[in-house]
Length: 250
Image (cartoon, rainbow, N blue to C red; front, top):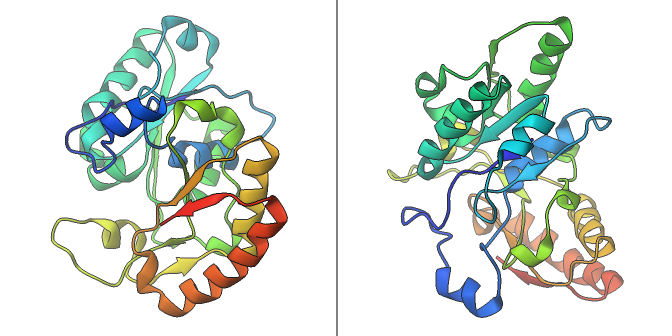
């Protein structure tokens, strides 16, 4: 079970309250990080993805779960800590990860497992310890994930009608040093990209699931990688025709 603890935080850039009301959506975008984590975990597991931006976290969800995974950004810090406390109240192990716990792991020591950094590199060690019966652990890696090996997020775990648009990631990393941003600490200074084939596969998956709306590329700095962006956009427009035209925004 996963949770994304915030609702129209005034500290978030994704705070389109009135636009969502006009469209009938509950929140701008779904929790792409948690959908990616779900795809990295064993696929024989049963998942419930509970996004607190769109629904309440009920006691029955904790009763259903064997383990609770949560994470998010700085604006979601109080909610993440609250989910850990609720998990323990219900006698469940809590796993945390994502940008905020990775940046400030000292604030999340009450969690049973801290899976820090990019999940592609740290989730395998967590799963190994979990299978071995370890009751707690902290997992981190100095390696950067290979984006050409990235999994397709579990878009099937959400309700499309709850959101204004879908999020998708083409690259991670940024060469700049903006004082307000911690991207380089999380993902490094060099942009790493998926292949065009990977992105088209993700778009096809969304289409096959019935989605016909906008797609928002959530990259740290999409246009900085000019050559990659050009080599990405032109084939993407061509590939888009094969999936009956989705609408894109970057």
